[in-house]
Amino acid sequence: MAGSEAFVPGVGTDLVSVPRFAAALERGGDVLRARLFTAAERTTCESGPRTTERLAARFAAKEAALKALGTGWSGGLGFTDVEVTGGGGAPPRLLLHGPAAARARAAGIVELRVSLTHTEEFAQAVVVAVPLPD
Image (cartoon, rainbow, N blue to C red):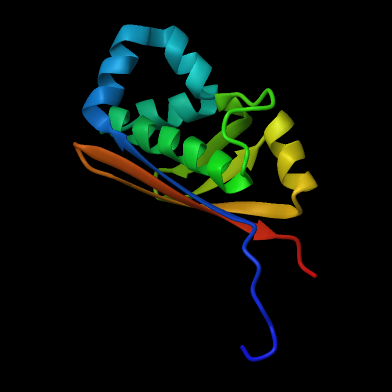
């Protein structure tokens, strides 16, 4: 539009090798799963087919979300501070908790929108930060 500029405070993307991620989950077991994913995320992904691919896509979403916020995993942020909801036909959404939610508020971000995709080899996520309206 002439005379107006869209402001996107951040964009993040991440790509995960599903076989490498599967090997990490195998080594780390339930302890690693609990460190990386909320109970709701684990229940959603483990309730259907392609569990590892679905978890890998959610892990990619968490990485991409922190890139979109401009923080990475610094400042006391944990993997469960970013939660991916949806599944079973519902579109994915991101919920931020604790320090991740505080960082979004401080940056004027009202929402993080996410797109997920996965195959047997790769899982990818793209996250766009949506600013508060003017």
